[in-house]
Image (cartoon, rainbow, N blue to C red; front, side, top):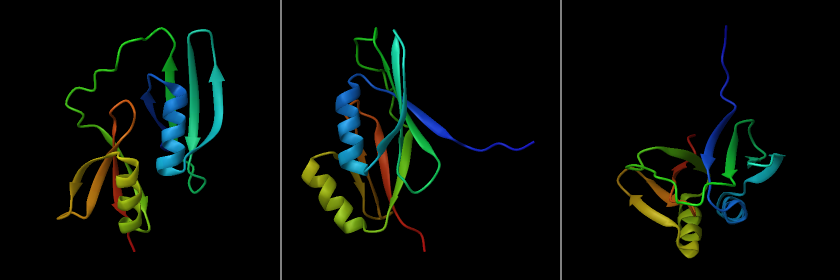
Length: 121
């Protein structure tokens, strides 16, 4: 028996705002969506791998999501850390930098942290 990771889910409070952010900040594009009376699910991909990010908008959930201590995060690899950091600073979404480790984090519209790491050679 084997298992393959296929997606991660984040619940979002404003689907259109989140879609715009993930496209602009990370180049993630909509792959497919599922609409129901109570929720909308949109799967995003980077066009490079098979792993997807699932954004779920619960239509009857008006309050912000409780992210606890926000220790959960997703990581994205870039081939140009300097350009990526400058771009995300321009977007004003950098929430934490760790120069000693050579990484930084950006925050999406709901406050989820997304780690940016350099490409490993």
